[in-house]
Length: 76
Image (cartoon, rainbow, N blue to C red; front, side, top):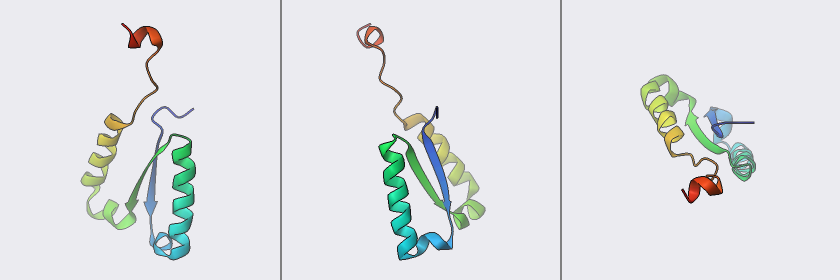
C-alpha cells in the first residue's frame, strides 16, 4: 500500500502531443480516483531547476491529506 499516495511523473516530448495529453489525462484521472495525488514536471525543468522540483515535491508531502482520524481521535 502506498503511504504517501503521491505520483511524480517527468514529462518529455511525447507528453506534449494531443494523444500524449489525452493519455496523461486518463492516467491522472485513474490515479486521482485511487486517491493518489499526481505531480508532473517537464524533464527540462528537472535538469534546469532541480531545487524547485525537489522543494515542490517536499511541500506536497505536507499537504496531502492522510486518512481521517479514528473516531476516538476525532472526539478526543
